Image 1 (cartoon, rainbow, N blue to C red):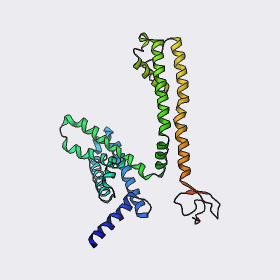
Image 2: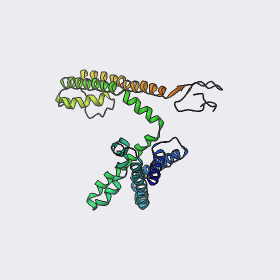
Image 3: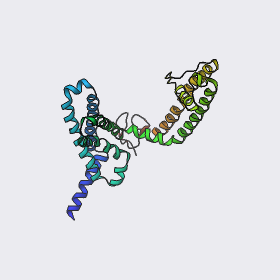
Image 4: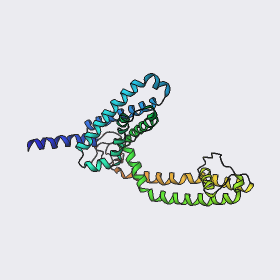
Amino acid sequence: MQKKQTQADWKEKWYNIIFKSNTPVAKGFDIILLVLIVLSVVIVMLDSVEALRSRLGHMFFLAEWFFTIVFTFEYIIRIIVSRKRVVYIRSFYGIIDLLSILPTYISLFIVGSHFLIIIRILRMLRIFRILKLSRYLKASQVLLISLRQSKYKIIVFLEVVLTTVVIMGSLMYLIEGPENGFTSIPESIYWAVVTLTTVGFGDITPHTVMGKFFASMIMILGYSIKAVPTGIISAEMIKASSKNQRIIKCRNCHKSTHDEDAKFCKGCGGKLDN
């Protein structure tokens, strides 16, 4: 009975360290993990430079295995101490944790010079480690909430944009025709997307006066459309941020907005009345 209690205490202790950040030890763990993630991503980037890889390839190889082993232990410990193991494994971060270590192990079983390209592509999946950074940034939670709250507005916006490019592409096909490069309606829709987003590859261009005028209208419309999703998400971010603030006035400096879990004033450091 005592052994089971000790094991439960151990798991609870490590759960608080790994999955939470409300203690000095947990914050220290997060900081160390953040440093390792950043270093591992830097190694991946440097390893893609041919001049550096030819001189420091062996060091990059050893560093990669070091990071892989560390993140493997982290992943295993997360599974062991997790209260809901299956939920964690299937979660977004659980999948990212797995993807960040798999490519190095897969490379052990794929040998031969003709597989080098495949190995390099698989190794690039290690860049997913950088996505693990977002779990440790408080601001990322605000962004995720904002995106979730604005998803229906964004979907409606995208429906309008898709309808617009279909209509514009079809009209340009009628105006310009195959003789001017608009060989089909799908090709014309592709041109409309490129033009509306103001990317302007230039592989297809209008030649008639009417086509150029119509293209100019689409470009101007493109600048207006860009502001819509930005405004939607910004409004939701302001709402999400305000929800995380408490309206408690500090008796010393009279600052009134504080974080939801704040116990001391941001301005003067005085204790807040709950």
